Amino acid sequence: MIVTKRARTRKPLYLLAPGCSNSTPLVPLLENTGLGIALITMPDRLLGLQRGYEMVPDLPNFVRMLATSINELAAGGRGGTRTSAY
Image (cartoon, rainbow, N blue to C red; front, side, top):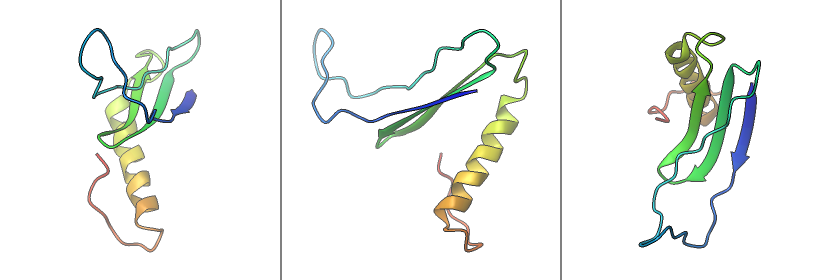
């Protein structure tokens, strides 16, 4: 597993024309790496996931468990619930 975080730039980004308003974080999978998690601080995106199917065949289950954990953290560990982070 590789986990990385990339802070959003405060400057507008341009590619040939208007400003870049959307970005999807990705982690290249190296040999013997089954999962890549890329975090980004943007208002509409939190993370990007990539997997090697042979090593992580059940990504939807991992995503559900990750969402549950994030929601528990957001609730402050008080046993409260919060709307999904996704």
